[in-house]
Length: 215
Image (tube, rainbow, N blue to C red):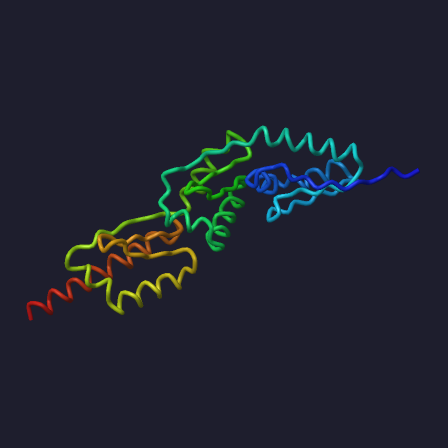
């Protein structure tokens, strides 16, 4: 008599835990370990689906809790709001995931209540995970002088910022806050280029206006 297969949908995990299980390839590991078991993770529904023999499902769930006991996390509360927003953009997510995979670092992140939560597969990998994820998004401020404040209200400024942001879709954001500073938020690989572009534009236009004033 064939052993009866059962299907169980498990929904008792926090979303960040579900994402972490996906990052460490939990379904693949369980299917390799238990040949008659199928494990699927749907992070959008925050659920795991087990399909197989009852004993294998129970064993896989025990393995899951053992793995989760090794998880380590850190809450970053000092991340500026504009940077937090970038962590949720598709292009930035793809960029960070690529970097993590290249360095073989199993880690994920989430934004919740204006905080950046970083989760690693183990305490030993946490520092490296935080360094890679937290360091992937950079925010710089360029103070506006009295002379340069009028520049950021021109069509030339709008064209420059639009062109620069279009060059790196989703990975460069240039905004002006209360006319006191330009806030530049980027992924770390384009930080210096975007920062230099903004500074050069402001410097060149300020000099041009000063020459016009004295002509």
